[in-house]
Image 1 (cartoon, rainbow, N blue to C red):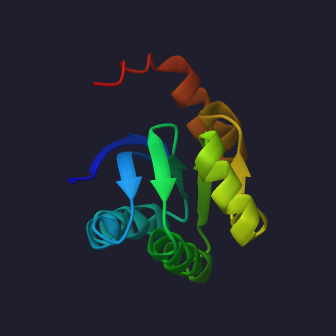
Image 2: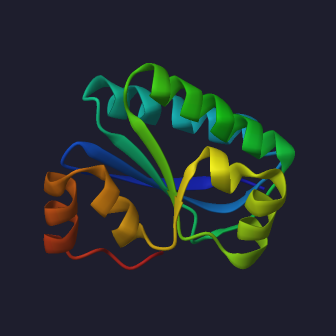
Length: 132
């Protein structure tokens, strides 16, 4: 199945919203889509926020992609946050302890508040488009 990722730039923060499942079939595509987003966020020492509200499953291969992206962001003094986990994905994060390795927030708004005042202000002032 094809993984779709919508992205949006808000001040110094990149928001990525993948839709579907991140498993062994889509992990390479997820990794390829994340690479330029990591580079863009890291270039400005900003943040990359992954809105997981429409991800219904992530496998160990998908978690590995997240681990690599988080390491790349740390090396460049930028932040990677994951927001709005569905219950199944939250459980996978808890079992694998990824909720302790990555910054995980309950909502996208909370994640934006941790990024920068400019990102939060711009995010709150821009009406979000409804999901497709």
